[in-house]
Length: 120
Image (cartoon, rainbow, N blue to C red; front, side, top):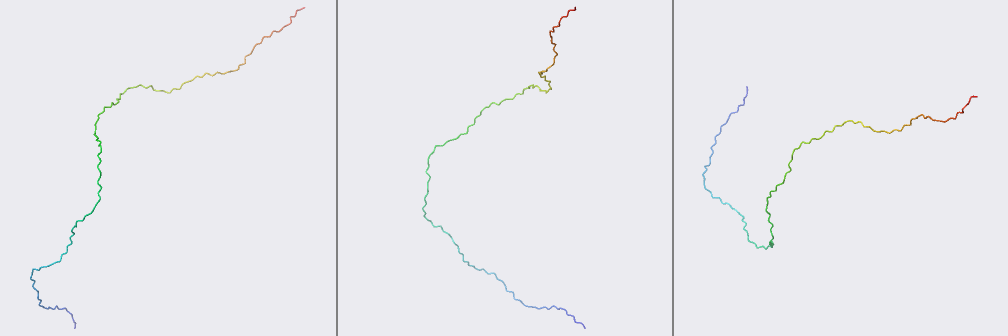
């Protein structure tokens, strides 16, 4: 023998009374507080320094345009022949004076007295 546990749903009925809603007009009062600042006129003394006006002579400037003609130097081409310098080797002769002692034979004359012999 076997026992099986099955869930059986139960149904229950209940009578519920739903109230009926009837709209009515209501008057609501609210307290409102408002702060208002009202300006109060006040009298206050103040020392004001007024500037003294001194008339002065005015200097007027006027723009002046002046056209000045300035001569411009003109350039002119000119062909100039410039000689070309060529380096050359030059022989320079320098005179040199040289003193040389040369022995020159001198002939000397001498008078010799030779006795004259007479044959006998």
